[in-house]
Image 1 (tube, helix red, strand yellow):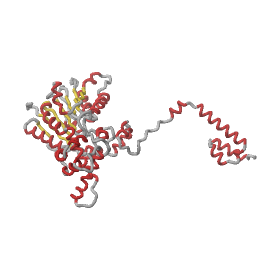
Image 2 (tube, one colour; image 1 turned 120 degrees about the vertical axis):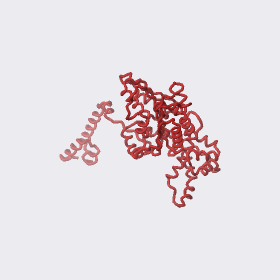
Image 3 (spheres, helix red, strand yellow; image 1 turned 180 degrees about the vertical axis):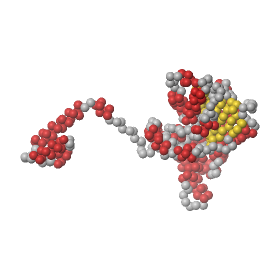
Image 4 (tube, helix red, strand yellow; image 1 turned 90 degrees about the vertical axis):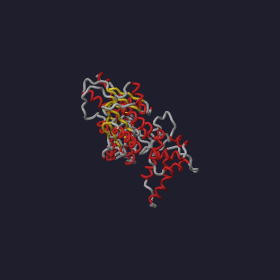
Length: 444
């Protein structure tokens, strides 16, 4: 079979385009000729030789590693959110822009207001006495990192002031070690100036803040605390970790212990409680209206066993409360999910408070506070529900009347609208502060 001149031209053009499949498809008659097959085979051999001669290292260097994909579009498990754990700026910015908190991070609440009321922002120190600051709940170190920066700045302004110290308490043994290591690396590592490195000290104490006074007694620092911060909210690290069981939004064991190395879990607590005890707990710890119905529905129901996971607990509480809410509103419509979720949150709050003795340790701290503060020392408390706020307000008011505190916040400070929008977890926060009198001796 003869191949025309035009067919040879087309073959040449297609060979230049390296499209052998198109040659075979478009010139099926031409490619049957031995001369065409010979040319095609020669071209394939040349391409293969070229590829074989290219260094593998060069290929690997040019090829970008493929980004690891989520297990699904929206992973629910904390351990699966590895993109956010990696601290990728673009990913974290996207999450923050949606008004959410990135997994594995914690956004400090009312940061500027806390530093101002602690006397660490906007005021120049006139004497060279070292500062002793206490952070009662270290957590992820959001507030502590800025406190350390403020202490370093104060010491730069007063050259003769040395050895200011931040004492940070946290009973969560998992988080305190990681946070302390990160703070030391980021803020206290030597950068060529040893004096600057050692001028601010960080002491991390793996205990509950109710032991503050005994710790200060052991170090001879009672009555020397210049500023104290007690952020009574949960750390975002604890909320985001399903295995800790602090949130009803994701599946996890019913645990809720601040220190998961000791004590009983929330499930074990429910197993030993009687309905009347749970009713009292719900009323006192979270002001729950349907405490009686929830207590008997959870513990005195032959059809169901006691819930073992957060999702089981949330489902059971919704089943108990939904008909009650429908009856109360006299509307045949479905109850809003927000109402049901609020009840579930109050139930989990009551269990968490009882399990960790949160009111007891708070009352102990408020009792010890006047004796641990230095004259003129400042205390700032961040509370997240009415039970905490009532106790702080009562203690500050009584201390002011007795002359222990020279001033206190009669009205609470709240997060700004912008902060509530950018960090929804700050929405229910209330800030109260008090200043220790300088001329009153506290009888211990």
